[in-house]
Image 1 (tube, helix red, strand yellow):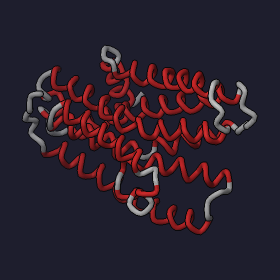
Image 2 (cartoon, helix red, strand yellow):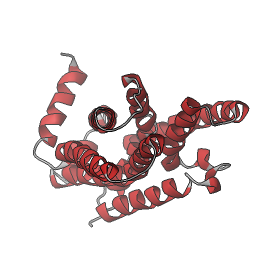
Image 3 (cartoon, rainbow, N blue to C red):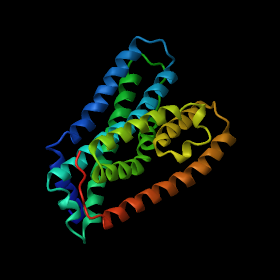
Length: 253
């Protein structure tokens, strides 16, 4: 195991004593259970049920990321007023990359559990729509890819400001994500990272069902991939530049 692997293992052990890992496990299982029970008694068509579940996942993600990053930042603050992160100069970016990688891995595992678990329960139940397993795996990846920017942004808020600001920003992100799933977001969703996951999943479902204009989808994909990629790269670079230069002054909650 290399240096990064050992560091990530150490980070996992630190998180084991917090709510962070439990949130990644409990929330997907709770969501799957609630939606499968609810769908058992509703008359929605199968595609409507799948779309509704995935849209809720996309909308909830910003709030959960805000909560998780607030807890992760608080963990560092309580461990020594951020000195474990910012009290060193040579390896602070490496330490933050390790924490970010662990959080993203946990997030990916939670999304795989949320999508695959729902697919197994829904497909094995009363649904007449049998989708291949890779459909739910693709959905998990589409939900996960925008999270790099989200975690960088919320970790910055959590470390620089307070837990309340971090969670509040996540809630605002969820509200915007829900709003931009409507027609109001057609022209501007690309510029709001909280809306990316919802739009990615919505467009992919529309493509699978064949009820979206291909030229429109192609245009959205071209512009979306370029802008999302650039904004994600810029967000990551700015975050790690801040990590490198920040002195670790703490603002109390």
